[in-house]
Image 1 (cartoon, rainbow, N blue to C red):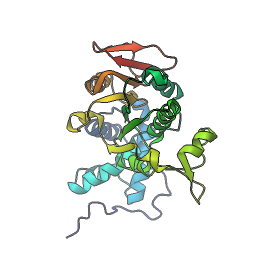
Image 2 (spheres, rainbow, N blue to C red; image 1 turned 90 degrees about the vertical axis):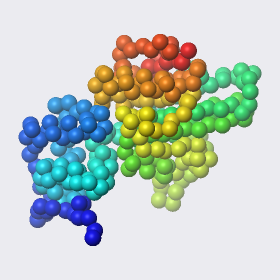
Image 3 (spheres, one colour; image 1 turned 120 degrees about the vertical axis):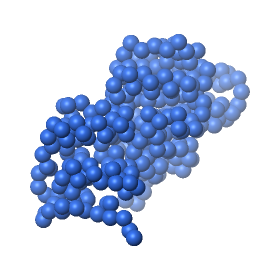
Image 4 (spheres, rainbow, N blue to C red; image 1 turned 180 degrees about the horizontal axis):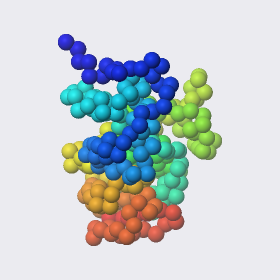
Amino acid sequence: MKSDANKPRNKRSGAGLGAFPEMDNQQFLQWVDLLEQRTGMRLPDNRRSFLVTNLGIRMRELGYDSFQEYYALLHSGLGGHIEWDKLVHYLTVHETRFLRHEDSTALICEKYLPRYKWDIKEEPVTIHIWSVGCSTGEEPYSIAMAVDNHLQQLGCEFYLGIIASDISRSAIAVGRAGIYSKKQVKNIEPDWLKKYFEKLPDARFRVVPELRQRVCFNQLNVMDMEKTPIGAMDIIVCQNLLIYFDRARREQIVNNFVEHLTPGGLLVLGVGELVNWSHPKLERLSYANTLAFRHK
């Protein structure tokens, strides 16, 4: 017998055209607690409209007009787990763009990578990078382009591997495909666009296979890092993610990052996301518009 866990219920005539249902305080707290339990993110009171809107969008797609019935669906065994995996894409923010953090990529090239050919002690140069909270892939591909371009200019042999992780399977599916609109690639300089993208017949752009194969996308909840076999990383980049957690969880997450850094490795965080934090294994790096640390 097929499960009916994802069947529309209470579907109204013209569902999807009217206003979203009202959410009372008790319901809001119920949803906030669920999101925190499953992702570690704590939604503040001033984000109620965000929650109502994004829940409402998904509920309309399924034909639900009751927060409580939809909440019950998410607790209905396997069907609930499958639906939660889809909903989390709506409830996590995916604002991103190519070359959004140019100072961070410049820091990686100037403070970690060899500056000149004679700085290289052994070839191939091997770089392992982890982009945490990668969303739809713009950040890891931006880093990949910058590092690849830098090392190619040095004329050295190198291996570059990037792990790109996000809690949303829908987001990483976009990143894995590596296909973006003309608007999305508008900030990429023409030389890089020509070098790292191929134009498709529908006027979209796809990351070239040579670069796409360097980036491995994986679904990951940062609160469950101990369950994921992430090895030693030379560079860990986590920007615009920690702001969704309270201070204690931010420190817990970043302390876990430190354990995955190689000696001399680089940790890059979002500016202002972890103020007045330090770690005995790290030293702060000074670079404009960045928050970065080097493993001692």
